[in-house]
Image (cartoon, rainbow, N blue to C red):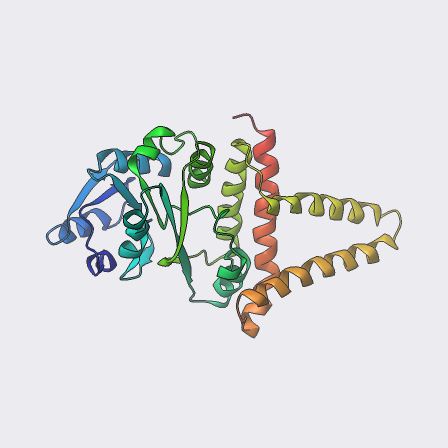
Length: 287
């Protein structure tokens, strides 16, 4: 809230949906409402997609800027995010960018795995996260809003729905928010399990899901090594090459400290297994 209060372009309104928090969130928001244009809706139990749709439906403006709880926008975030709408009338959706808040070696390792560098991003193909995005309300209406049947990865499906109707995307890397990434192996596995599960339920397949075949091939080699011990060495070689490739890519993204390097393998496995098990589960479970 303090970061939104310091925006170089003040928001005309701030619509917030609280899904039933049990801490001091609501009372704190009521205090901030004395100097910020906050409109608060408390709806216990709603999903992110339902909450987003409710907030957008209640918003009065024609351009919606979205940010998530736990995110801290840069002072010029909103100004940079909506600038393309003023410059070009054909723009329908502006994708902002994001940076992690790193407070531990584990988070440093995770950031190197999941966050691409700007030089890796193709502006035409980049799908914005709803932690930093703006769009015209009319295109939200045209695709029926966020998919309320999805419990996670709803913003990816929303982006792809906009792509299907020919909405015009614009990448704005200067519109930055910082957000708190997961800080335990259990949380990492759970997060990417849910993302992958719902991607599979929605029929969405990204190139990084090709790792499913790599892991299944590795399991096959491991099983065969019980009958043919020499195959175990081939399994170790393949695993080492896969790990080396992932580590070198991570080092190109950021200079990892030695402590983060020690965390790299367990973090990579938690991330990969969340992807693999989540996607397979999503494919086999009926929607």
